[in-house]
Image (cartoon, rainbow, N blue to C red):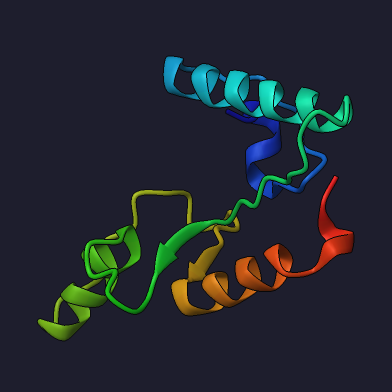
Length: 109
C-alpha cells in the first residue's frame, strides 16, 4: 500500500500510494481506522512489520527460497535486488512487541 519510491526504506512516515488493488484496500482500511482514532471515536494503533519468519512459520518467503535450499546444500534463491535492503521479522519478537504495545497505555492514539 506504500508509494513505490518508499519501498527501499519504509518507515511509519512513508507515504501511502498503492500501485495495486490489494494495496488500495489496505490503505483504505488503514485510513478509515486512523480517521476514527484521530476523531477520538476509537482507541487504537496499527502495528506493522516486515516479512515474517520464525517459529511455526515454515512457509515464509525467507524459509522457502533461502533456508530450505541451504539445507539441501543448494544455493538460496533471491527474487529481489540483492543490493537493496529487505527486512524480516522474527515472529516471536513481533508477538512480544505487539503484546507490549497493547499493554502500554501511552502507545495508543
